Image 1 (cartoon, rainbow, N blue to C red):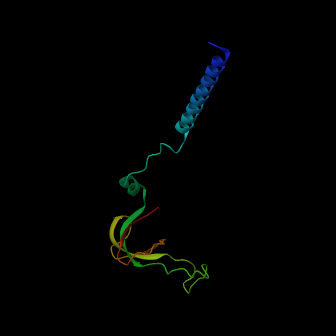
Image 2 (cartoon, rainbow, N blue to C red):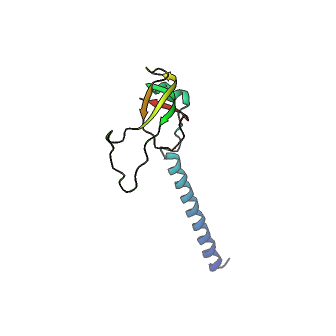
Image 3 (cartoon, rainbow, N blue to C red):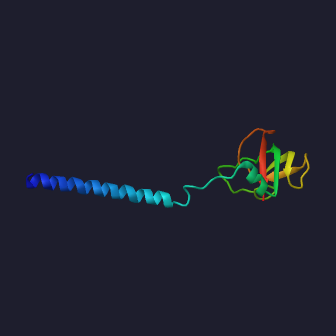
Length: 119
């Protein structure tokens, strides 16, 4: 084996060793990531942790914001929220038919039902 072949072989081995080292260190970082293995709560666990949970239909959506003055307040003051009518109480001190206000920015039609939870 000549000097050229030996240097070429040594260079290739160095590159392979460097690639293995980089791959190993990347896998160690992924294993140590605190967010990679978080499990989500089930719906029953979420409901168990809530002080209140209801099924409610949208009664009055939020008024659209004017592009020329997005911070304009109306006669009722700053943002109040959308109004919902409770259809079913899952947890909490509410009655079907009660009207509640919640932060909601969607543009859904009235009577669409939502699961609303509160702490």
